[in-house]
Image (cartoon, rainbow, N blue to C red; front, side):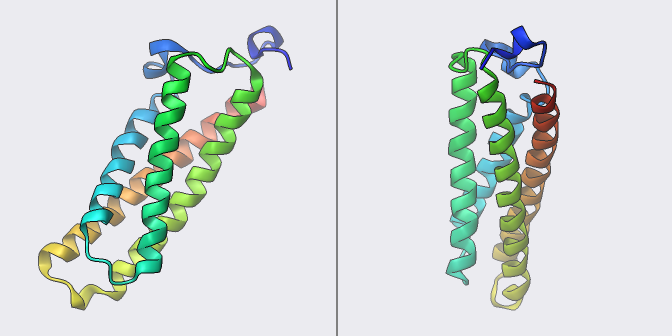
Length: 153
């Protein structure tokens, strides 16, 4: 496949321009909010292991994959090829879907176990739900703009 620059489409940034281009700037916020979800779920009580296990898997997987993609973009591993634009769009769509499912399940677990928690533990779970929905919103926005970039490449 020809590089996106040769075919007139949009390309992925490389080097530190990753931190100045949209939607790739969202990597930083996804990294921060995904890390917060990971920390809050890991430190909370686990009343429903299956649900919170899925939330942990999603937060750790997306945190590690986002970090890997960010590093690969910074070192210009993509070389301007359009297949990386497809990978970027596909990853962000999957991450958005995963985070949406994890957010809904974490909210459900928090509602179902409201009476069994202390005040501090309950608010910790509420914080995890809020940050999970913020991460979902970030991944959805990144997915939408990545799909637009993919469509124009």
